[in-house]
Length: 411
Image (tube, rainbow, N blue to C red; front, side):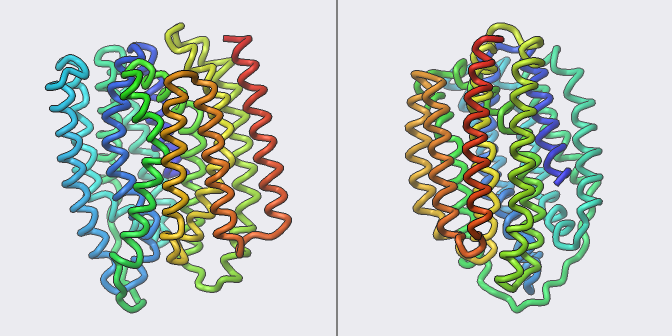
């Protein structure tokens, strides 16, 4: 779990420090480039992380993972460099700002080699090695990026991502994993449905920003991106790491009863962690961050408490999605993800007009996603877990509204 916390946490810290020295418009430019990078990460990085342990157990699985990583790395490199040149040609920003995005092109190159190593560590139970490498990489990238933030602005954020991936590649060595299960059709059984699900999940999560970037430009996109980063990145980092641990345990459990016990065991802990993180984010954003960021970011900080309402629903969505994907049922998620994409687009239009109503619609989208996955994965739930889930979701929504009212009066 720490492996994901420190990685995303380091990016969040650099983003906040950079925000002190740049305008929302400049932050919006970096957010646009990040959309391109994270789109291909949703197809490749997140897909491999979800199916890697399971695929590695089959003959030919490790080689398949390496080949797919190389293919996606090349495509991602083309997309990132293409965006950088296009952004300058169509004058989304001046060339002296656009060129600051160049370090992002290093990220997919490093990931081609580092991603199979990460999967190998997960498949062989090397969580300590993984966490240690990520700690060093994240701290090293912070040491490079933070001193650069006052000097080069968004280039520091791009450099942090690049340095972190390079250090992971250097520090994490791959151990050979010999699959014992019979060879299967990896592409049709695991890759295609999971990648499609991940792509739709990315569109669902980013459609609002895409709409905002088109309708309102880089300034409002910068505000929304900072608010989302503060509200969701710490929670997403911790909970994604926890879900990675759950995926690994699901991959080693072939009995349905064992999976049900496993999910119910972890669900209460996921809910507790999510609620604790939500409280912490609201307290820090209103009482601490507002003292460091200038008035240009007031709208973003007021939005943060509202966006934290989605922390608890999203956490459970990830857990239940992991159950469905592990059982080879990723395809059943696709229709519901199209619903999520539509609602995310609507929330983007709402964000462009009103940040409050955009956040409300985004929360409704996550509640619908939670209800759908709860129904699809109902075999691993019981009445007690459903009752606890409902109680935590309602409490999280009330907490978000109270935090929003506090922010309006305090900022």
